[in-house]
Length: 169
Image (cartoon, rainbow, N blue to C red):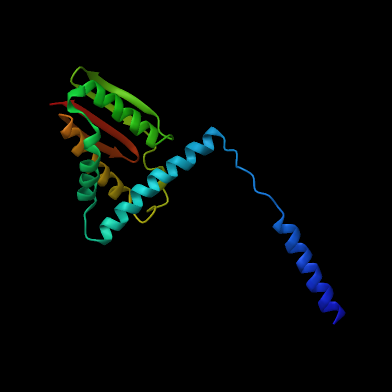
């Protein structure tokens, strides 16, 4: 009986001490902040696409739906230069592991590449979607917004090297 009392007292003491521990605010490096944001953006995008597919909606149609939601924040009068700069900024921000390189440009067209676009998919599907689903959905989204901004959007992908061409209409 004494042993049970001692064990009970020891457990009570340990739990009391542990209950008095305090929490601290985590300090993240800029790299860790980037990693967290990148993973959340991709996870939210992929989770939405995964749910859409479960409901019978194609990746392209889901991308177009997102584009329809986003296009209200874009003013076509802002012009081609504004649209190109914003899209490049957004795409670079969405994938901080990519190196962006402008391949060709003039006042009505730009072609640029982004490396490492398939980073999360190198081991196979991520968050329930394939890399191809990700690309097709992104295509639907970006074409919808680009069309709203009086721009043609095309892309091709070669093993994670993502090439985008934007042309003013």
